View 1 (spheres, rainbow, N blue to C red):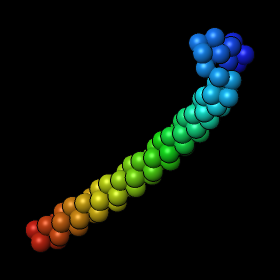
View 2: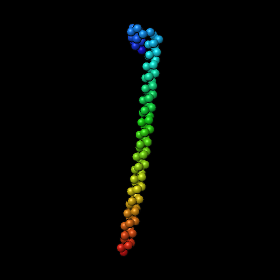
View 3: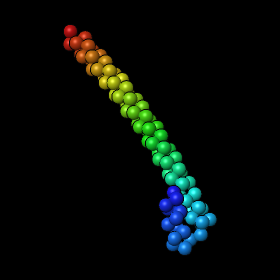
View 4: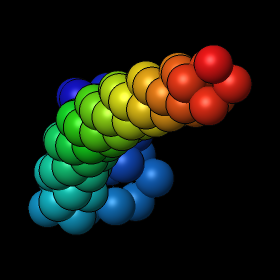
Length: 84
């Protein structure tokens, strides 16, 4: 930090301005880190939501498959009963 502050002073900037600029840079760094953490958390939430939807879709397809198989078996039995 001192090197940056010294560099500002060498270029004709006063110490209060350089201190303020460094402080704002630190705030920006912490804000971007917090933003990155929020993005990671939101991404994880979306991944969990998508996984939940996929699981529900698989369950629904399984139920539909069972219902279709039951209906086909009932139709076969009805045909057997009608033929005999």
